[in-house]
Image (cartoon, rainbow over all chains, first blue to last red; front, side, top):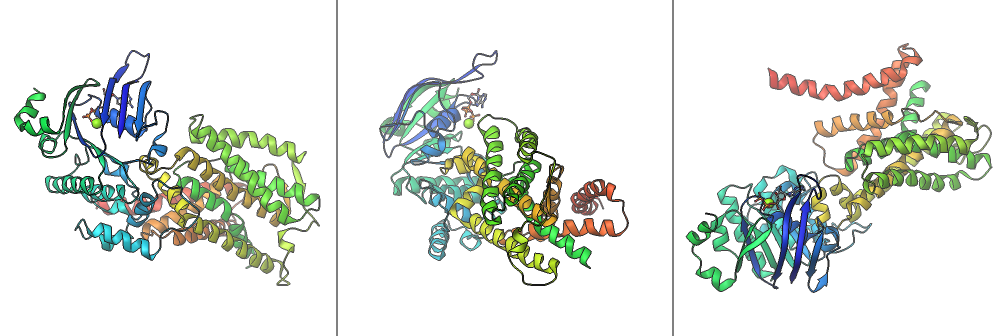
Length: 249
Length: 291
Ligand SMILES: Nc1ncnc2c1ncn2[C@@H]1O[C@H](COP(=O)(O)OP(=O)(O)OP(=O)(O)O)[C@@H](O)[C@H]1O
Ligand SMILES: [Mg+2]
């Protein structure tokens, strides 16, 4: 589903403070695979996800989605396949817009934004129905600005927004980093459920080794812009949490 | 009384600038001061078309287009050449001065005895009242169009662009393109004010746009005070308040003049007024937290 070939990305190129954030990575993520990425701070995890999403472009290498070369596509073009949940809840939702408006935009992620009114009664009901799945009681607040909700509620909604329109790839960059343990658990369970039910290909970055252990069917360890370890589903099953912990020793 | 009616009429004339600044500053979060230039540009095109005895309804779309072009240029310089928005606006506004002067050929074009928008309808013998009806219809129509636009899927994407760029890009919107369109829209509205004012006052002057951006800023800031105070989220109400802001702004200026303040001091008084409107809500807040 996602093909990455010999990818390089550096920041401040040619200057004294040049950082080689991604150092020749090749990686194939199969359809319906749920890949977990772990690695210490600054190891290039977010950069890799940004490269897949197209919010930054590589110096060298090739990126394919669904066998199509998308290396030079910008993020707004790759949104045809990709939905994202960011570490910061503010990045995934527009605070001043209502929940309903946010969901409307998500519902036409892969489509042109036309000069016609798309929010009607049946759309409202559809959104309410979807939101009620979360069991947070937010379905009665769809006219409220999404900025009036808590970070956890916003992350949960962002997650739901990703499946409002056709979605093949879901990218999650530390989606629970800003949340309390209870909300974190809810977000991770919801994500896992959506990934399974909608047969998504997913990439999750996390510092929570328990989540890395519990979720996903493949795990890679990154360090200094390279992949140090790559464990498939069976190997991952054989891992213990202590093994994972020792990766960072 | 007529004095205040005139102020209201001027407020209507400036509603385009107010809506334009509302779109650039509040919706897109871009400080755009192309305004001074695009406003005059609108007035210049109006004058040239009318002086050739061509219908005001030909001038109208033309003004919208040239206004949009000037905004799009600022947007292009800002997004594609990666220049600070304020600087991009200043550059375009500055060059428009030469463009306007060249188009006009001289610094002032009188529009006396040429029929304009204020001659298309004759509902009342009172010229001011007649202008009131025409301007009111005009303003309501613009507000309806902008309100509808902001409610469409495209409009929601516009509003999201100024709110969270990462979010809207990940949802498939080319934000550079959206900002260019937004600034084009804002400046076509501004040019519409130039269209109205030149016909209302009966001339176009090369200096009529100097500092005019403050009229838009003042109107939007007045509106914002209400919006924040009453916690308003409705698009329609916000637009209505911006229009009200434009009228209140002119009324305050009229009152100032009526109180006998020297007309030479008007710009100073205007600036102080805008400052006061910005400060008042903060003063209240501070005193509440302090005591
Ligand atoms: N826009 C940027 N400009 C300059 N350097 C950057 C930029 N983005 C990332 N970097 C650098 O690239 C390296 C990789 O950063 P990245 O954000 O991918 O790390 P990460 O693995 O996601 O870390 P964390 O776990 O802290 O989120 C870091 O050294 C970082 O400082
Ligand atoms: Mg990161």
